[in-house]
Image (tube, rainbow, N blue to C red):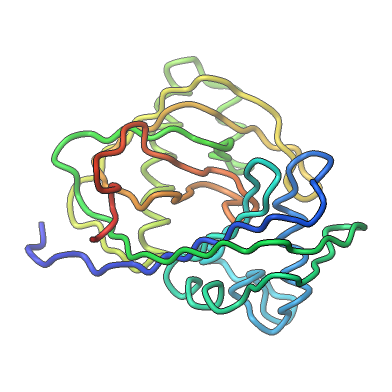
Length: 236
């Protein structure tokens, strides 16, 4: 294990409150589309370069919380958000134009680091753990094989997120998923299997990190079950 302290990761969070209450289901995908249309030349907002998909861990995540739009920028995605929003701007969310009554912006630095004891996180939004190949394997597997597959995917997803945020995991990573519910989720034009439940791992993670597929659309959003006086993964 490296003796060097992990480099802090800048994190910016923006909560958008609308002038009129939002009526309808949560719409992080519409918020993502609005930002992609507003900033077509900045691939941090939409993961595309001239129509070509950029395969990397998204730096900007779009979420929905209690009727408000939420944007979270990690690493390179933090600065554009911290400088972007002000009150009394409008966004087109699908067919509806909404105006921003209030933009609450917070900025912090966080770290990913080994945990001396297992940390427990729960998924605030469904985790899209499976791709097309391992979804077929999951469907034909026994109950114990399914648990083992999801544990392996949790490790792989955590490693992918760490790599995407330029953090090197130099210790053996352990992760186990305790499933609570399986449900169908819509992502673009696909219906995918999502999971809710609890993740155990030996990593301190920044508050609000997400893992798995479609994290920029609000999926796979993790939150620590127990928070100490100082948030896990945050630097004071």
